[in-house]
Image (cartoon, rainbow, N blue to C red; front, side, top):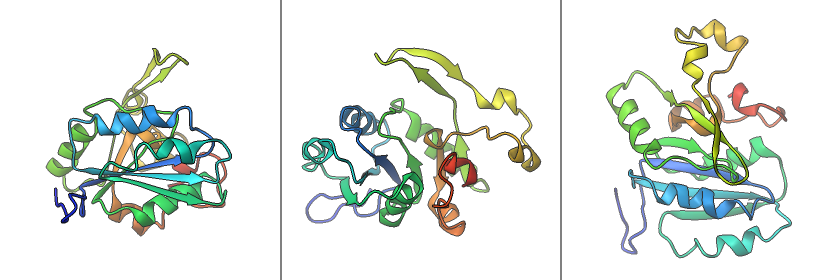
Length: 191
């Protein structure tokens, strides 16, 4: 982890991008789930897509932390918001986390280690849980069980990944130009 003279991370390994639109109630838990990671070489980038709730007030509590960045933009939609985060990202790897989601404490550590140990790959995914409004897991998803021997043709009919369960090399996302702003739904599948 590289720090500048103000103890700010200058070249993080992972950039975690959180797009947010009127999710002030959920945002603190999402951000804390990142700061509670076993892997600490990251930056958090919250991109506020023109929220009309108290998101700006909520993020003030995180502004004192190193590794936390806040960007406000006029409402442009989810794909454009993620692209704004990508332009600001300094990490070698990128993770996406929606403002109403959380990640388990070892997600970044496990995925970074896997990609470092498998340098020919540019993306790694994981399982995930659907949770109720109280944060209790109600359904576990293991996408590899649907596609144990994934072939490129399979991606035309089924996407075994969701964007908040992957870690991807930033250079790979940059090569494809990020998210297509014309896609209004399942923009992560298009990526």
